[in-house]
Length: 109
Image (tube, rainbow, N blue to C red):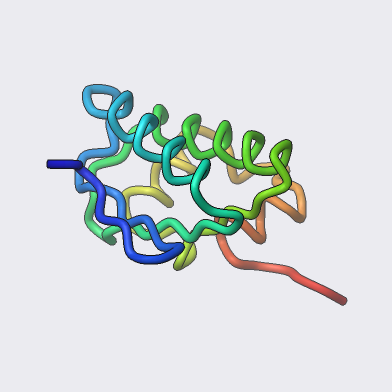
């Protein structure tokens, strides 16, 4: 049984988004991105996250962009995900694209 749940262009990721499970999540995400032009990623507010997930999402954004696809988070990063972004220093000096992706801030002005 897959760790993630797919509904249309939504991919709901599993609870464990740490280095121990990230390889499976990566494979599922790549398969999902290959099948859709636009992907929305859903995370549980209380999921387990470490820096490997942040790295995976950044790689997925690059992959999607190079393939002419769009990827977005269903909701702004919060809880453990936001905490890892803060602790890793990722929030400092974010580009407008990063702010829009991770925190849903900014937009067309």
